[in-house]
Length: 207
Image (tube, rainbow, N blue to C red):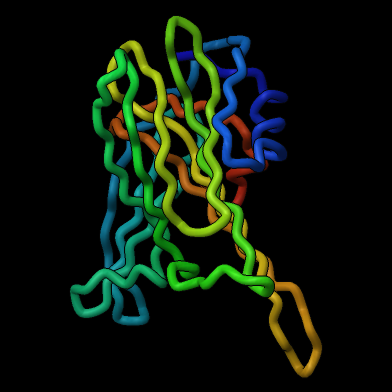
């Protein structure tokens, strides 16, 4: 697979904030860097067990992605950041249905006037040419969508979750902002194009 131009990626991060799937043909440049996904688990100083998914390449920086935290052997979703994904073949040729649930500290967030969320997935489709699709939910941490891949059922993309909450701190009303960014790949070896947006993932880069 090949990289899409950087400006197109930025456009999708800043836009596409609706519930319709949008597709744009992308230009290509050089071949992508291949990353291998690897989970590592270890105890923490808080007596918790933590498992972290890393994207590793000998050619560039390592990126940490999903995090699972266990308390006494039980997964604590409110302290973790990870996704569950299911993919199904549809009756339409080369079309697959995927549903994704994002788990984070906002799992129990109730959407109302004081709590707002925009949960989005950007993903790659292939039908002879590469394009980007998107799907948005403003009501929950769950998204279901269909995508095209004439090669196989592989899905690659990124989850973008932005949460805004009105809070009271020292008797003053303040807007609290929280964000979650997680790469999505159904293969252990990947050339996920969204990694090319270094500013987007700068907090997850391990130098």
